[in-house]
Length: 167
Image (cartoon, rainbow, N blue to C red; front, side):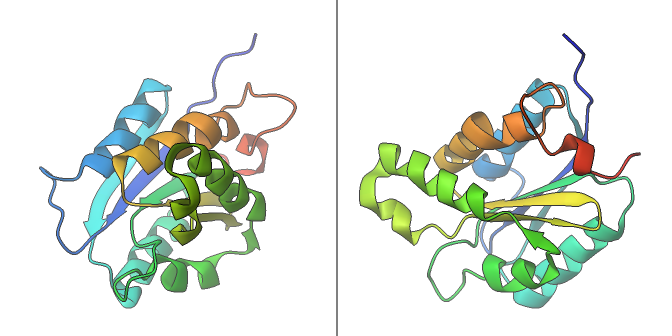
């Protein structure tokens, strides 16, 4: 079997209240990506504000060393959930299947409450962006059951690594 092609991955926690010490969701993603053999390129916590989110993710998209961006938080239906509004317009190609599959898997864990998740993903400028809810459980589900395989160059019959920018 061929070896893993490690990726440079940025993690962005979207929250008005979390700090580096209390960011359990971001910690789950960092632990999972490093455990899989990828490199944490950057880790930030950004206020749930459309302009701030868009600026942060735009800078990561423009950084030619970033191959994947994982956002956690801001995907619900409260007035302060701005990830969808901030990030969706930046995407060149939405990956509809990610949100659909995430909600299907999440249904097995939390039942019909999953309809309040607006998890989504897409490709932009040679990078992939995954946006997941802000709970540690949702981050674990997204990584363990979808993202890990799609960012693993060994996963067959297909994965996204051949579509990402080379660094």
